[in-house]
Length: 262
Length: 105
Image (cartoon, rainbow over all chains, first blue to last red; front, side, top):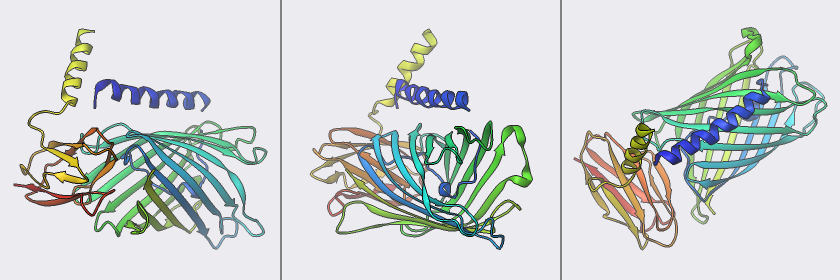
């Protein structure tokens, strides 16, 4: 990749980072974000329709039955820039709550290196979430590096995400740090077992391990050709166990993706 | 400034295809050659050129690579070091005809 292209990607990504830091983001438990991103993009002209669903299970009613359902459309603008827009339905945990429209998200993923070019594949993610009810909820900005490395037949992905809330109803001022981690065994294209972990360290200025949410558990992913339609249908399912008192005992997730050339 | 220009020149030269790089050509929705021998145990850059008027996607589960090749364009695919063996690949948009195998020796 020419130096000027690489420099352009870093400048674009760093520019977004500076804006985010200047505006500042704290992490909020978001079961709609139980997805580990790869910095490797398929290329320009690839479109994606995605569904993400998740639900918590806990004997404590205040942590039980939280739900998130997202639908999105994404598109590869270039071979190194992918954009995606989401709409989210959510249900707060606890009895008596109902599903409501939660907001929209706008996301960019930048691939910074070619797969296999260096020891690790690198990328960046930048995301803005606009909530539907800013009186009780806050917008969020997210930014962070995506790192991927192959160990033989396994692939490890790590996402580190800086989060800052925006708006009048901020619950966690300052910048928070979250992570998403996955190690996946590339067994078959249709069936790839994985171990996943998701954590939210909370605001950097108010580090409180007891209040953090840490989830870990098994997952399975794969993709199939549809035969009568172009493209592939992918799935990513898992069940995550809570590791801290603040975490729900269990969280189930399912992600379906249809990728096709457009 | 001189160091920057030197680095820029080296980078631009390095990003171009070298004569030593193995190459695949996509033509009429087929790979040429369909069997490509490469040295085992070394890292290399495979250049994939698409001479068709439509896009193709170079894909190989065994090599863990999946990348769109726009019409009339060439892309680098960094591979290896590979163990000795055969690594099938295909064109995802024309799987009936676009097939091949990389043989590491």
